[in-house]
Length: 498
Image 1 (cartoon, rainbow, N blue to C red):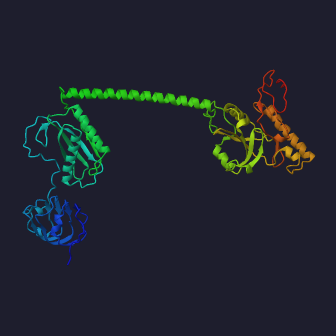
Image 2 (cartoon, helix red, strand yellow; image 1 turned 60 degrees about the vertical axis):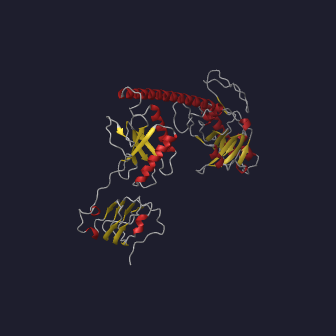
Image 3 (cartoon, helix red, strand yellow; image 1 turned 90 degrees about the vertical axis):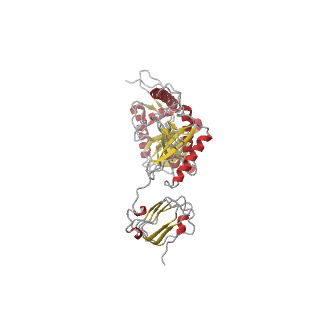
């Protein structure tokens, strides 16, 4: 025998409407309608049959039963059954259309609205509303939004509980609220119309409105577990107690709002000016402490000096290229610091000259040296590839010269034998590099420490003049002398330009 299948424990069931159009068969047990929390049953378009029996012990919460288009042949109800029932499309309704209300598709009941408590209609003045306690007053009104409802929006008892919760919140803050009224805008809408009526008088004062707003704001940020966060959007309230007229009160509100907004704009403007001034001070201070602050070597910045053919490396990049400046990559050292062999991502070998703490220059001096060295481009002079000036480091990156210094080759340390013809070529190459530095570079450069240790040999044994740590630029002028302290090779009076 076919029968309806129910779960073992359905005591917490409040809505059953997920079994439409499922081919469900059999007779619904009468005890099913006695479930204490059941509010709505929708089992239409199935094959339910037999007699529908709803006894007087059915749930007080039950509001709606829809069993359209089944095979129910009879209906037996208790004397106190008054819920909405629809049996259209069942054999029990044959010939009973217009006679039995359950054999007609009924219009839905009106939307929920708080009923007055035994209220007798009274004549209220214009704009006044009768409260649930039958008092004429000017309520504080607005929209109450259920931001995250976790309950059945069609359960009318929920709204009664919500009204009680609101009244409890108002009373706990000792606010003059006599009663509240809730009404739904539409079915399944999470938005309700909320009216709050004053206690003992016909209107609220400004203190009362402010207190109500504070409480409703707390219900948003500290929600009740049952109802979730509640968001209130208030309508304008112009019926304050003690006012001589609505228009006068409204004018005061508008004037106060205008003055407040003006002050807010002025304060915002002052704050913006102060922030801009502080930012400018910080930028100026940064430029004073770091001469590279506004120097972008990758684009033209008008009058800002530019490096020609050299790029800026980060210190982390150089650590990566030298395996954290490992001793295995150290190819030389001197008073300035150590030189490390490194490999760029392009595969190019470079010599990375890292200054030690005691030999570092000031930021402006280091920048001036970079500007000078970046202008040097000659086949017999070591080229500058880039630099690093961060984390308290001063690093110069040169092209890597494979065969070391001329001194190493002359002494036989490098294993390279130099015949007299090759030595002559090396001497001519070094002289060509020095001539370029002294006469053709702009501005001219006096090396001041020329020696075999500062002449490098590339893979083809071509001479490359290196080590500009002691170099000085020399401007041309009449009767010009070198005024800096002489280091390395002695330099006397430089002849006047013809």
